[in-house]
View (cartoon, rainbow, N blue to C red):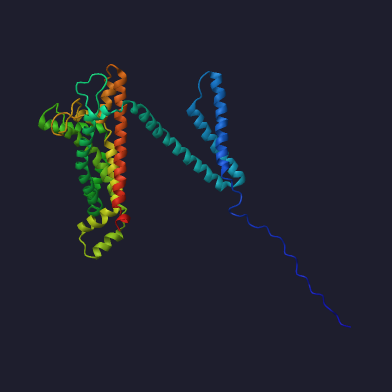
Length: 368
């Protein structure tokens, strides 16, 4: 009698709970937008009821603030239930950053829209081809102010850019760790925060010592603006030069290239895009200054192409005088003021476009 052994069956595998997938439990892309819309409707309902009860219009600022707060609360709560705490915090911070960006864009968009809508009414061929000489009411233009702004700003740039760039080169390439470099950096930081009126008083006092009180010249305005431009050029250029890798300098030195030629041929071309941007920021910083130009360059209704002779009108001063000294009809003066402000914005925009083109052309990647 033979005994047969039945094969033992292996125990059935016990079901183990799998770890949750990282990508599981994710909100669809439309949910944040739906929550934003629901927040806006809820806020509009509340402020609409309050407006009807008070008999006034809807408080737009309050409506936007409440909408943002309700949305942040909703997106955090819904995301916490479905996606977990970590993703909820991420969506909350994203909402806060987006709200801050929207708040920052509101004054910019409002300024641009207001300047365009009010400034277009004052733009005409006469505005760009004539001055305000012998004009007491309607008519006239801002050609003398446009020319004055370009001349004064150009002179200030010619003065400021070499001084600021050479100072930045010294601080980065030659003055590292020296006491004089630390002193220059401290003084540049102090100059960055001085009020513009102080720069105007400095330029006026400087020329008054030699030419007597009451003097007004276009070059005085350029000197005042250069005082404001130089620290901006120094700080921006210094930061761009520090971003250039030291390996590039060491490679040039290893090939026997002198230090001054390394700076000229290696360091500056590498940082030219950032330096150009910093220079344009400094020009945009001073081109709209009014107080120092009122003190130094004064105002006039006639054309003046000579920076070293007589008063010179600029667009900021033209805008100020047209708005503050309104004649009859007042609408003509207000239109000219808005038109001058719009032209000033367009000039700054054109300069920034030119700077971007120059930076793109001379960038190291394009030069290869």
